[in-house]
Image (cartoon, rainbow, N blue to C red; front, side, top):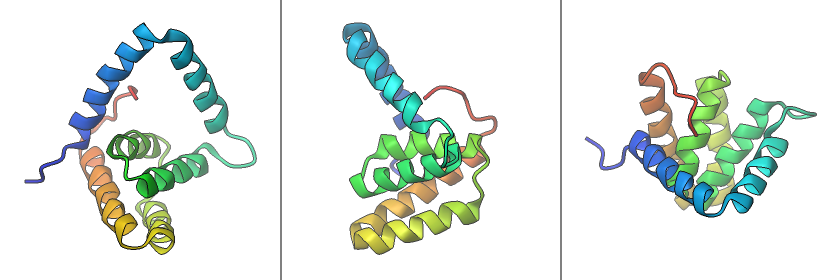
Length: 122
């Protein structure tokens, strides 16, 4: 069994984010508005934008980012091939450390894909 659960990570971070939203509502409203605008479909699809967000999460070695963006990608219908191609680019650009987090992204994908349905919380 793995020592890391992306379900637990995203649930725990969501709780902490609710605290931030309560205690820093202006900051959180601003961040949420920025996220909504940045991820809205445009020239790039919502799926493409989530793949970019996942790639940045891999490069940043952010477990919660992997969890939230993989969940979003699954909701958007990402294929395993799209995920793997994105992670290959991450590995090319980031070397060994990105390879390790690409493997973590695969674990998140497998964990959330096995747990149906994906909840709408982020």
